[in-house]
Length: 100
Image 1 (cartoon, rainbow, N blue to C red):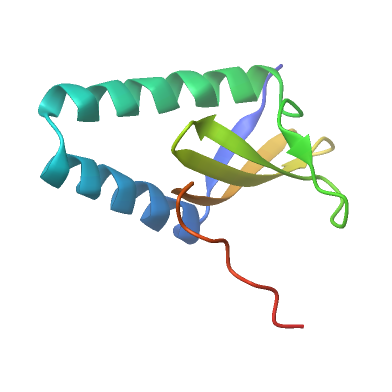
Image 2 (cartoon, rainbow, N blue to C red):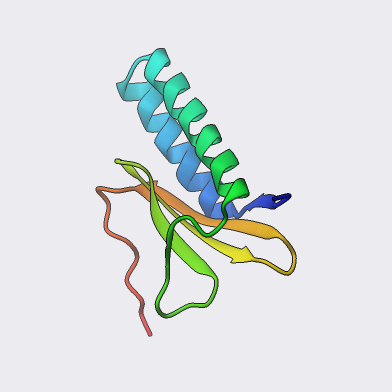
């Protein structure tokens, strides 16, 4: 499937925060492995955009683990054939609470 992957600013910041943490606390090899693993994951996601758990309250919103320590939230628009990465965060952090 030919799907376009778009990064939101929030997803870019979250991913950069994780990579920065890994660079400070882990070896270069582990950083490379994380980047390679996430790139492979995104290629799989482009082939199967509905592979993670669908939100019960928001249409076309999906979330789930990239790996055991990283959670992804994204929106898939089948009409545009576009995946928008909304947020990437550490699994150990609590998600933002809905204030409405």
